Length: 164
Image (tube, rainbow, N blue to C red):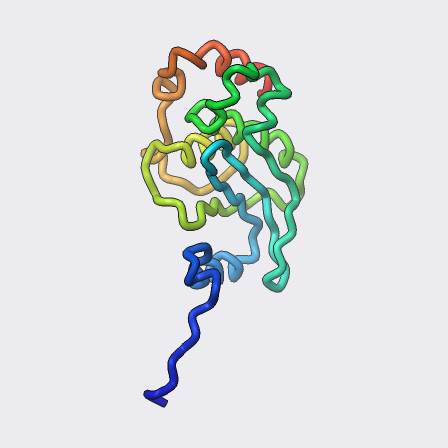
């Protein structure tokens, strides 16, 4: 048996999937919030799995903030801390009435675990809107950090009040 090499799965080779972590998430049987950041947007989905088949229940994209009052000339800043927080609020508004959204797992995938980052600003938006997700309070950015950007502060405060 020493001469047989194991084939590496394509998505693992491409750096897209950690199968060990995915299997651990699937074993819990609970829905998860999957968040991804691109070069332009923050994308999030509430996903439930049944026999390794993922089903998207609800989704939110920071691009939707344009329809809620985010100025078109600031469309390039749809990936900053404020936009991430507001995307979390948007998704929480969509999933509040879901019956299986009681115990949710937060899935950041292969993104690096950096305290007070955009991923955790998104998580703070979910938690501030009433979604219960297990987390450590010291990883979330504080309110002062969210309102620090002077270019988008007024927009953030206005939309935060409108979305909640």
